[in-house]
Length: 356
Image (cartoon, rainbow, N blue to C red):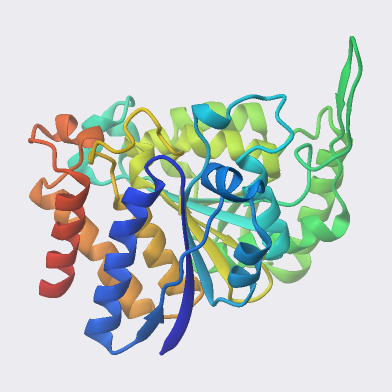
């Protein structure tokens, strides 16, 4: 296979973890006989510094012509003025819109070797294996905004079409898993959530009758993610709720440094990134956890390139490293081992990938 994968290292620890991800892509290409082109481009704070834009036109053009995009992270204290007209986060919103990405997939599972890394009791973590599907293009983040002297307004808007397509994405995922779909909303007080619930019910009844659908208010979901997380299979929800719930769910696995994500649209092209931020406090120290980025590479191989064997092999290689106790600093203490550097952890994945 030949594929162009646009690489956007971004800010903070982004370049460090993305470097390990691209090494994995090179190793996969070599082992399975693929040709991956990995052109790099600017996004986020570094792009603002060099071009004045969080998403330069040439970056978007590269990504639109690529088969997939691998992203590190954006942002940092240097660009953290909320009054600034141009902010790193605008690059993320713009690239999602520019690539037509509307579904953010965040899988969460718990490795038995790392249960002590989570603040939850071990018995609550047994069997946790879920995917949260977050809508990316609607809701309060994209609604009309107004700021006056003594008041501010953020408008939450959803259309029926936006709900239909995200529910279909979640339904297809649930159909290939345990056939349980939980739709999360706030239908007791929000009109957008009432629309969400009505459309979800109709789509699932008509197109996914084999699924078990349940509706849950977002506050109840936040509680049950801690109380009984193993009950969830696929969760589908709107933009802001998904943003908050996925960060909460990341603590089930013990660290944001373990969890990947995929942002998808109607076609095969997707954007893949770890769920963690740019972590400027540890940038340049060589201690960032590369596993979430490497697992994002696995998702890239699976969803955009349809290379399931290769994707599973990358995931197995990361699992092997965890089993062997080759762990970065964010999770090493929970396993009682000496922490591995970013480069050492990445090298261990490459070794396991070659041996498996």
